Length: 301
Image 1 (cartoon, rainbow, N blue to C red):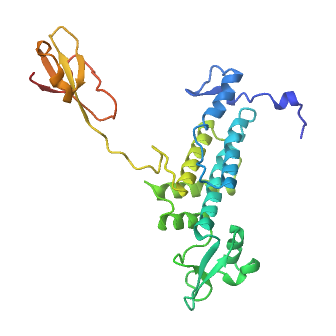
Image 2: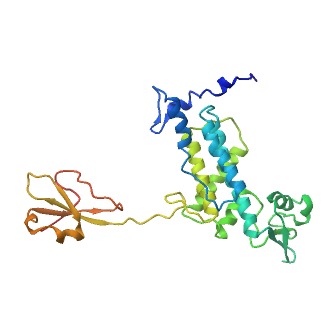
């Protein structure tokens, strides 16, 4: 390994310099200031709520800072990408222990007896399920076995990330639209990062998307919704009725007030043709796409 000088370490990566908010540029590069700002802005909106434990937030913030480091070393984006899904795994483990308040209910298969397993570190639970560590007697055998121990109410729980997601969804700790699809995708991507088969790099926006997903899932574990996110419910469109007025054939359309305000139009301005178009986007007004007012409903004044 060749040791670099401070000046060399502080030089930006030319690969990162070709990315902007408009995408990849092949014929030019950004200014140093714009490149540094871009590497940070793509992840700046995705904050964790204060309800999330401090150690999870610290782990997650490392992911975001790695994107800033991608300005100097392009491969840092791939590290941020992989680490984002590990942050979700850490959050699931922390939420699991928090939910059980440090005492995990274990059920003996042979007798149905339930006993609390006092653990404050998820690693101890994982060891116990594998028959190791100080709680080795709580070993979990295959599902077909008649002996051993299982998590009370969750016989398939084996301590894996997939099992944690399944537990969170079935208990209502993690809810949301397409939650099972998101859980499967995050688990698969975490496994690829944790057990790599080759070297890989990702584009800056791919790293930002992983961080966005991680932030939404982590916040959701502590009951905080992300409006417009993958887990957010689809909001039904609100339909508004507006009025379009064409005083004369050779005069362009003029947009009046919402339809409920038609009675406020002075009588002397009511002549001509009127249309009532519907607009499904909340807080917006309808577009006039052409001189015919196509898509609007014609009515008499």
